[in-house]
Image 1 (cartoon, rainbow, N blue to C red):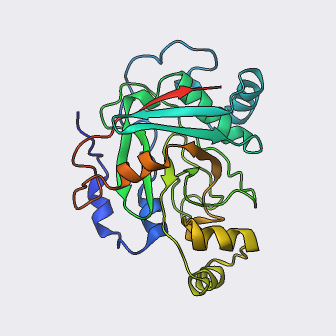
Image 2 (image 1 turned 30 degrees about the vertical axis):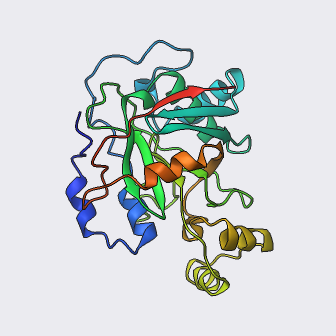
Length: 256
């Protein structure tokens, strides 16, 4: 199974040092590419994935999240399991993740872009057979949800075509990151018009993360166990465009 996306060549133009640019380059494929004419989703409660669109996704996901709640998921990989907690106060992102997981959408892909000391991104594959409607998830920024090590967030298209910073409907990432100094954080604050709290500064200086992504991408969960697996995946050998040389496929199960 190939893990190479049709837009892969564009990533070579992105300087590796530009973390935000890297993540922007890891956005979802436009709806309707891979698997657009494939078979129906695995039978599970909730709306058909192909039926979701910009007009109906908010009421459908809201109703789904209320009727079929969930708080934790397990991402199974050949390197081990990663257990994530989903935040209650990002209800659209949580419901969307729950719906795709229960429909087995994520089981057709894996972690397809790995940038060591930054993040591992998953949620898709060129060979998936399941269709997904054309929609983005509205941003749900919360000041107490930030890009610390282990944060679960959604990729998105860049600001030029997505000024409201709406999220991808399926491309998620887990932050590996690295530690930062006060001087580093001062520079990020000035450049990105942010103000880190004392707690955030302590976390970024001791535990690490990707503070340059704060306020730009929705964080909707965090790893509660399996950070060592995130590290193993981040250490996976990749090619020049950050695709893993050996696939890291996923199966996502809602744990509770």
